[in-house]
Amino acid sequence: MDRQNPSAPSRAQSRVSGKNHPHARPHAGVVHDNVRHTENFTVIGNHLIQHQELSLLAIGLACYIQSVRQGTAVDIKTLADRFPEGPTRIAAALRELEAHGYLRRTRERTPTGRIVTRTVSCNRPGHRAAPAEPADRPARRTAPDEPPPRKRRLPAVPQPSYASPALLQTAVDVLAGLRRHDPRLLLSATDAEHLAPGVAAWLERDLTPTAVRHALTENLPAEPLIRPAAFLAHRLAAQLPPPPPFRPPASPAPEPRHRLQNCDGCDRAFRAPVPGRCLDCRTGLPEAA
Image 1 (cartoon, rainbow, N blue to C red):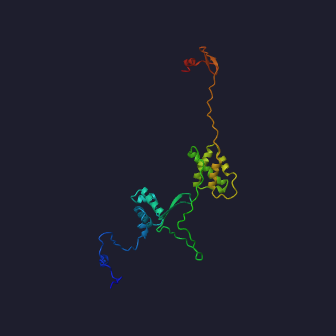
Image 2 (cartoon, rainbow, N blue to C red):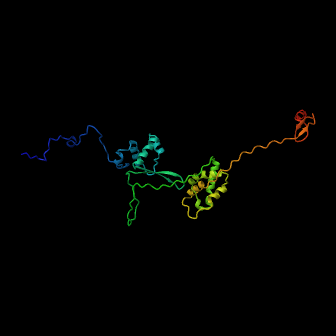
Image 3 (cartoon, rainbow, N blue to C red):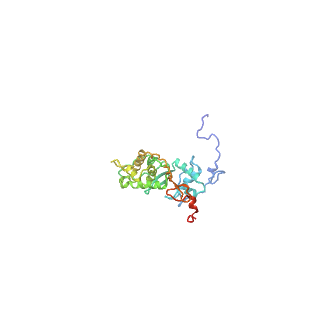
């Protein structure tokens, strides 16, 4: 018979030590001696631990950040104090995690006007927990990586030639008083800090604080001011008055030239506002001594 049996092996198979002897250990490679955790543990995906592009420092840093409690500080300074790596290496590792979606960092403004960095750790990049929707309302589909809206920057303002502390404080006082003329011109501390150099540039051009306040508050639009700080920044730049004309310093007045007088002592001529004795004769008098 020349027919072949497809189920028959073509050659003898060697025994595999792992299959025939389950308790045998490999000659090389890691051996796991695992114990099941029941408390104080963190679940981390292999997509992070075995990531092909992240550095070992970035992987370890992501594991640490995912293991800490909510609200724990994970800024560069705090992490540099916690670990032996310096701020430069830690900052580079954080940028790696941010580039691969394991970290999101946004800058937000607190109710007091302070700018802070908000850090969100993602144990599964590309996935965000959707907010709870009413039962009778279908959930909306949103893009998983849609960036949060950013506040637009304020327009640039003129800069003074010399921003002394006293001049800037006067400028801040002018800006803080604008809301008394129109409640729509209420400014935050951050907005006033941005606008103060522009007001100082007006003040150093021989304008009084009252004149600057009047220029900023006159002819305001009737519609609501969505961004009063941006409106004032545009007005400070667009209506900047010219510098005052150059005034040369006044020369000192010449000393008056007195009339010639004849000295009562030596009859010598000398200049003085009233008749009397010359300097030599006055020096020899007892009362001069």
